[in-house]
Length: 284
Image (cartoon, rainbow, N blue to C red; front, side):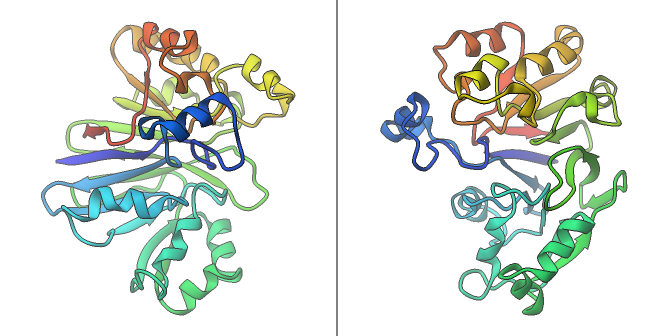
């Protein structure tokens, strides 16, 4: 049996975000239940008790604590989506100052692999053999014990590296994980068609709507993320037929759905969609 455990659900800066005093951040400072770590998954092979991380976030210490006490003390591998600050800086804890791992497989796209090889402090991890960088290829199936992982290239700001989403397939069901993407219409794949082939989706929900972004004083067209309202519109047919369960993740600190009392949060629930919560487990 394979379990996907949600270890983080926030955009890169987390909730509360440093230096922010918006309502959501203030509430998170007052209540631990409102806090959210950067988006991350743990994949657990229940038979062998081995586990894998999807992304190495700035919150990696807290996220690993949820898995390492009951399972193997170190991850079997780490799979990176891309080179933005919420997704790879946790690698630094694999070095000699902390875990001092030995040739831990870190799966990354070609551009991100080059970035890690040639930029300090990440290159030190390679030189000291704390990590072994393994190349990701779009559509190539990687078998990991009782489950498989299929990388999917997605369009997202490419100033540092390419970006991947992942399909995780267990014995009984499968899950599509895309925490970051520019626009669904920019993707070579059709979201609805891809979603028809899986049972669960965990998708980019950085911003809820254009109104949220305008409230931040930003131009909606400049934001490289699909709005939750749009994603729900695209996947509503499958959700209505109960052929697909959709969870939203990678929530920006400004997102109104962080407050369960808002109309936005109630709308998500009424339409049959769900907000991912840290600690939740999905059996595949």
